[in-house]
Amino acid sequence: MFALADCNNFFASCERVFRPELNGRPVIVLSNNDGCAVARSNEAKALGIKMGDPYFKIRNIVEKNNVAVFSSNFALYGDMSRRVQAVLREAAPSVEVYSIDEAFLDLRGMDVDFDRFAKDLSARCRKLTAIPVSVGIAPTKTLAKIASKLCKQYPKLQGGCYMHRQEDVEKVLRTFPVGDVWGIGRRSAKKLTDSGIRTAWEYTQLPEIAVRKQFALPGLRTWQELRGIPCIEFEDIVEAKQSICVSRSFASEITELAPLSEQIANFAASAAVKLRHQKSLCLEMAVFAVTNRFKENAPQTHGNSLVTFPDGTSDHRAIVSAAVGATRELYRNGFGYKKAGVVFLKLMAERDSVGSIFADEAALEKERRLSSTLDTLNATFGQGAVLFGVQGDGHVQSAREHQSPHYTTLWEDIPKVKV
Image (cartoon, rainbow, N blue to C red; front, side, top):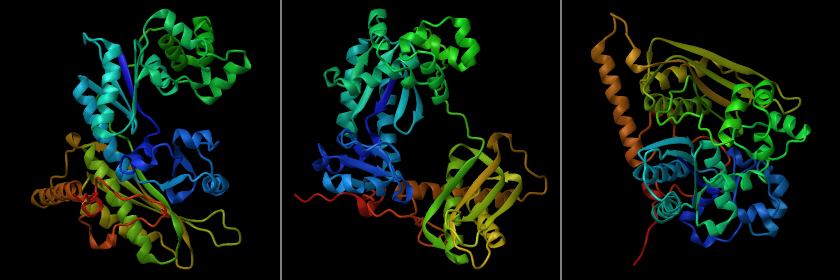
């Protein structure tokens, strides 16, 4: 058996953890620069606010219905996600983190009442993290995803659904839209609906040879999973990324070198932390900065610079320094830069590094210890607790007019309770 634990309306739920007065009130969370809605509470969905709606288009709905609006607070969301994952890891021998708000649990070999297990796990997550979590359990990962969605539709399930009997699976699949099935993309969904296949059950009734011919191996795997045959592997070890990108659009154009260098230095520092987290080294780093292509009659440029590290590196100081140097190369006076970023290319595992025979091992070890110390201090006292001078105050220039405090990651934002 497999379980899928899915945090309900995750970003909005995170904002409610420390603001219980928001329970029952519509809540939305906006994207970077407060551009569009990327998370909505059930109450906000009921008002007709859709995922991706530009904020300026729904402002009237927001003001008329007293909708609580928040800018993205990824430090808070990431920390709350780790807390939920910790609860899940106590409940199952193997956990595969699928996204910031979803994780699969491998329950094979466990001798428990799965219906009770699902409900108890949902209740435990709510008690220990205050995040509502739907737990669906089924013989395959695809069916577990569907079971978790049922929890959100039917409160009487108490956050947990064990779907395994063939008659129950058939009943659910007969009304479940084929386009909502995990693994079926937009193009496949359109192809299916155009041919009269509108439900997951109808999809399972197609001949195997027809599924293989039209949708290749991915479509066949989904077809088999819906029929109760597990064929999507469980992966509790996350593969290292082959590239890492940190970029951002700015709230206003940057016209001077110093502030642009600060922003790119912070992007490089953030990417370096991710690089070390997955125990990789970077052989190439691309740095870019572009003007606003949507601004008519304004001078345009697309600056980029490539930095190479022949032996590979994850050293914080080396990466940030190289990024600042690359910024000086690509910067052109007289232009307003609207977006910039850093991309790590040609990554390799630390364990595969050979290094140069001419390298100063003592100096390299010193840099590794410095990077490790920085990571420890920032993890302990909050991201940005220790910065290099070229990073300025460590803040990325973006519009976050409605951002909530970093309740769990910054000392100064920890809630104060007076007794």
